Length: 374
Ligand SMILES: Cc1ncc(COP(=O)(O)O)c(C=O)c1O
Image (tube, rainbow, N blue to C red):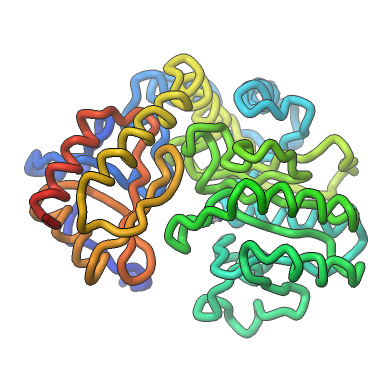
């Protein structure tokens, strides 16, 4: 059987990982500044992560959501403490797209309305509602096209108000920092205006923090730089360091009813163990502070390379543009310098390492970029 050929693959197969590095079978070492697409939060093969998952697997890997599972409450307590949203409620699922589906559904149940407002260049996932909210017609199948989603330009508060004034909207969805678009920051002032206007029209605000959350930007959530509190917040990627976990944080104003949401795999014992281990490591190793500190260092050092353009981002969610092809630049970093990075659009390189990354690893990137681009 052939694999369904949807990915453009590098001809490299990492078979092991340790900290901020991955290794191919012949022992070649690669610096991982991509984190498997912003997923690796606590580094590869962290001993506490391995121990916690292994011990849980030896006890009980899975039972369904029809019985008590105190690991879910332990995880909720840790996320509440780390995020500052301990008064919110937690719903666990399996991916970022699924987290967004559930958040959109909750907003619609709560308001009884149908329409969703999203922004230009947004990426919210590939399932039905999430892909409809994504501003990329190439990945929206005819089945997923719906008049229920309207996109307005990011930053255009008048356009937002014009739509919300119709009274038809169940929610507004926005990324903390747009990732797939190439690290586009909505701006703290825009978040404040958006919170005000969504409150004015009683429309739930959904913050998609799937890529920008879990400490990546130097705050637990990117929107926390603006001081706003959304009604629903979605998470995935870094939450369990590669174990598939998604989550929705739900404001206390939303009341649950039995059967309103559900999942077979979400919140399983093994998934909770993985996410608990990550939360414990993020807490005990002060990784959010590290993301802020090393992220500032990264941005400062990138500015010393004259040929890089539009250096942007926060913490360890950073992008810059190169002259010419971004994908070619990434290939050179990978094959000539053994450094994994992320891409976006024609000319953007994204740096999305584990939150454990240090200044020594950043220096390796800077040395490579100087050789490549000066
Ligand atoms: C902002 C954002 N939302 C949603 C998703 C979808 O997450 P998943 O691939 O886990 O479904 C992604 C994935 O890149 C993302 O970056």
